[in-house]
Image (cartoon, rainbow, N blue to C red; front, side):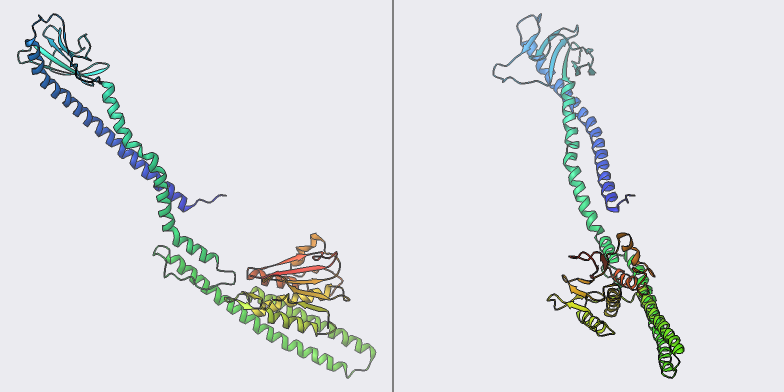
Length: 444
């Protein structure tokens, strides 16, 4: 579904409104201009007829002929030109006594009566003498009048060709400037939730959208309070559960030193193994609870390299794992990322424990940095089929049923990394190998 855009709708609406208003104003102006031009042309014809009447009669009486043929006014010294106004002087019987050089010989199709008349091609005005013995008729082609009106109307409508793109550009610029606070608020909100729950603030926002920022800040405050409460609960639960489990394990181990029967020792060893498994499972469940509670969220960028060294050193020296983990820092002096240090240590520890459990016991687990934001954990072993690659991210799903494990290590690490906007990439066979498994931690 394509969502509509407020900016696009505003641009189209405002540009369309400008065009419609301009067209309406131009149409109204054209109508007024049409009537005004017609009045001006009619007045010009009438004024011309009244002035020419006296001159034409004077010219007629100065002639020596008997007025049997119409006399054509002609000036040899006048350049050839188009005459938009032509006239005929007619007597009471309708004969043409005098005419302009472009006027037709045939009388105009208009009655000999003072006033306006209109033929198919001309607008004609007739003006008579007081005794109504002679009449002068001045005619203007309708095409000339129509041409003048059309040109004037085009002068009003033609700017639309340039006005439309300019208006669209101006409206788009104004709308984008006006919508900039909305875009800034949108960007600020989009940055929240990925390790960033800091308040947005409304100091620079206009009053129309400031309430939105206030509402988001209140929501972020409630989320922070909820996460802090869950973190405190997870931490307290971890402390309360670790202590009795450690006590039970210590008592079982102490009890084993006082019992000499072989069968009883085997049972106590089995109880000790089960308590250890319960302790490890409890630890994983507490880690998962802390991960779900948002323990990984951090507002500051920290150096994770010391934590990486500490986790690798701790696991390398525990149990029979000495010299099984090889760390290559790749010449990096820092590993900067926006994540809680303890959460990163939990994620890395789980990945290393998985590699130690599922990898070949005779080959080392390699940990190396590649680039400024990635940590690679590589172990040998059988190739994991593609159909299982995504399933092993789920909780309580084990990659190899023959190996001991809770099925939570990879789920915990994946939850922590996704919580801060990073991710874990799983590759099998490992890069540059024919077997093995590789987990790539992508930090932000």
